[in-house]
Structures are given as structure tokens and as C-alpha cells.
Amino acid sequence: MLRTFRASCGQRTIATSFGTDSLLYPGPLTRLGASFFLFGLINNVLYVIILSAALDLVPQSTPKGIIAFWNIAPALVAKVGWPYLLKGEVRYAKRIVGCCALSFVGMLMVGFSTSLGARLVGIGLASFSSGLGELTFLQLSTTFSPPSVGGHAVGYFASGTGGAGLVGAFIWWEVRGFGVKAGIGMSSILPFINPITYYCLLPLASAFVDASTGPSSAYQPLNAAADDEDEVAVDDPEHNPLLMTSGYVPPTTTTGINSDENGLTLKEKWALSKPLLLKYMLPLFCVYTFEYIINQGIAPTLVYEVPSPDKYPVISKIIHSIRDYYPFWQLTYQSFVFLSRSSITLGLPPLPRPLLSLPAFVQAIILVVLALESALGIFEGGTNEEMGMSFWMIVVLIGVEGICGGLAYVNVFYRVNQEPLRPDASPIRAQQEQEFKIGSIGFADSSGILVASLLAMPVEVGLCGVQVGRGKELCRTL
Image 1 (cartoon, rainbow, N blue to C red):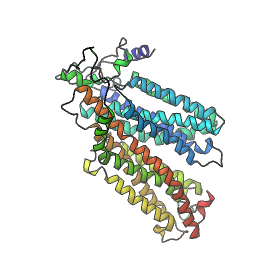
Image 2: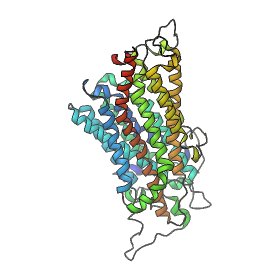
Image 3: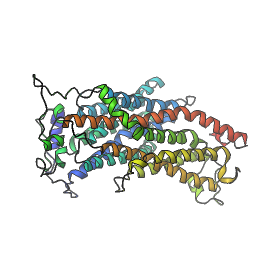
């Protein structure tokens, strides 16, 4: 069935040279960017929808943090376990279809179950699918050569994940009026966009192979007769231009079986991951820990009196009740995350490798400043009546927080994607190493979010207690 579906899409492809583009017949590079943008958007949008719907999914007496935990912990399990447990080739088609099925079933359980336990299981399934999906699409980006094309794919994927925050919140805002069942039910069809994109929009890797170094770079129709497993594996020359350009013949044993098919051992994977710990994983972990402590622990306490239209004509158009502050901080954060995750697709140069830790240091400073503002009101000299300076300073700081978070994400994965292949390895082995390296990075951001979710609750309670101690009790009215 999958072969038939892919063949029907492939028959509609247009032969076009690498770089050729038009409004009616977009070239491979445009199709690649659009595909990875959709992959990132759809893979992450359910995460945002579930968080946005948290108030409607659990009883009023249930801590909303339980939704955040079940929305991130299974994704962390997928990102930590899958790269190390997987052996052999990556079957991209099977993974993408499997993630779609898991997300669909999970969202149906969330929408149509009446018990809290069943809904949490559904959230967990969707979370696991999201974590595995992110891992899969980042690995898929490494199958495109030259490196500039792989970096192009990573840039658009990161931009899509940034857009998911805005799109997901907007979708739930529009469908929540239909109720949880109908709203979540309508959202459950979104995961089907990814397999459709993979089969019908994503160009083959062979579309980017230069004619002087390999077979024709014309975009070829998808082969209806190809075996689904072979056409998405890293040892397929049609999907891996490394094999097409090198003339490499895979070594065989006496039984004719590819000696690389068993993949990397745990020892080899650990040796590959050790150099990545300080260079890529630690900066990403710190950024996500700091920013989610800000978002979940500090931002809910950054509340002030409702602004008077006479005194604050601009702010009063934004804030109508004290409950409007936190959603506005989140909207500000998500907007700047989207912009910064789109930095590479917008043509801005990537951060130099020595500066990959800079966003984490800036995040730490912002965390301390916002915590002091929450506790002491440092922007207005500790008074509770004046809030104009506090409001705009918080907007600026949360905007910078979003920029740092987005820059850390897109630049870390871009730099890993651009790591040179080991020259003394066979093309298949080099591809497996590249896939593992970019896949192993993914647990850093999820583990940072998980740690932050555990720390955010006592931070929020502590800051609210300090505010009450100085006579500001707004945090208790939320």
C-alpha cells in the first residue's frame, strides 16, 4: 500500500535541475525546505496544543504540571533510548508512518477518554511520537549532500519547530470552543501531514548530486517498484548520494551480507558521543533548563495591577485582567523563538562554534534578573503601584530569552549536521555515525525541560511567598 501511495505521488513530480525554481514547479531545494519546515511544524504542534489545553484536560484540583511532565518525559525516553538501542539502518518511511499512527491514537485517547489516567497515557503516546519524530527528521537531514543542502534542511526544520509554538496556540484558541472532544479530535488529523509530505513533497537525495560527480542531478520520479525498506535505508544509493559519488562497493562476507548492516556497537556509539557532551549537549541542556525555569516558574509570578487606560494607554490595550500577563509573556517568548530558529533560513550566518555556549550565559543572567524583579520589584524601586517600566523591561528580557533559546537550538543541530564525515570509514559507516551523532544530541533539550519542570514549582511558590511578604498578593489570586 505504501509503495502504491508513494508511486501515485511520484508520478506527479517534475524533472527539474538542482537550483531551478518557479512558482508552478518548485525546484528540489524549495521542496526540501518546505518539507522540513512541515516536518518541524507538525511534529511539535501537538506538544503545544496539549500544553495549551492543559486547563481543559485535567480537573481543577489537579496540578497542571502533571500535563507538562507527561508531555515531555516520554519524548525524553525516545531521544535517550532510541539512538543507542537502534541497530543497523534507519527505516525512515516506517518510522514516520509509525510516529503518525502513535500521535493519532494518542490524541484520540486524550480527546475521547473521560478518565485522567487514560488521557495521560494518550499524552504520553503523542509525546513519545514527537520525540522519536524529531530524532528521525534530524537524522534524515544528514542523508542530503552536499553539506550546504543538509544545513538547509536543518534550518527549515528548526524554523518549523519554532512556528509550532505560535500555530499550536492559535489552533487551540480557535477549536477550544467546540469542546475537548471535538477540538482534540480535529487536531488528531494533523500528524497525517508528515507521511504525505515525505512521500509526495520531499525530493530524493539524488536530486542534489552534481552532474560532474555522479548521476544526473535531475529530479527523478519516485520508483513504484522499489522496496519500501530499501528506498529509505542509508545503504540505498538513490537516497544516499555518498554511495553514488564514491564508487564504493560495500564489503561482503562469504554469505554476501553487507558487513556494515549490523550498525554501530554501544562502545562505538559511546566513543562518538563523548566529544559531543561539552561541545553541544551541555550548552543546549543549560539553555533549556534556564528558559523553562523562567517560563514555568518565574513568568507566572510576573503579575501587576490591571493598567489604567489613562496612565498606560498602550499596555491597557494588551492587558485587561491580571490573567492576561502570563499568556502575553508566552506569546512574546514564542514569537522570538520562531524568529531566532528561522535565523539560518533567513540568511543569517550561524553562530561560530566557540560561541555556542553564549546563549546559555545570557539565559542565566536573564533568569537572575527576572527572579529579582519578581521578588523585589527592582525595575520600579520595589513599589507595587507603578508597573510601566517593569512591563516593558520584562518584554525585552523575555524577547531576548526567546532569541537565545532559538539560536541555541538551530545552531547546535546545524553544527552537528555540518560535522565532517570520517574519511577512513566506508560511506555506509560514515552515514551511520553522522545519523547517530545528530540523534544523540536531542536528549539534551528534553532533559533540560524535564529538570526545569521539577524545579519550576518550588521556584514559583517561593517567589509568590516573597511577594506576599512585601504586601503584593496578586499571585495568590490567579
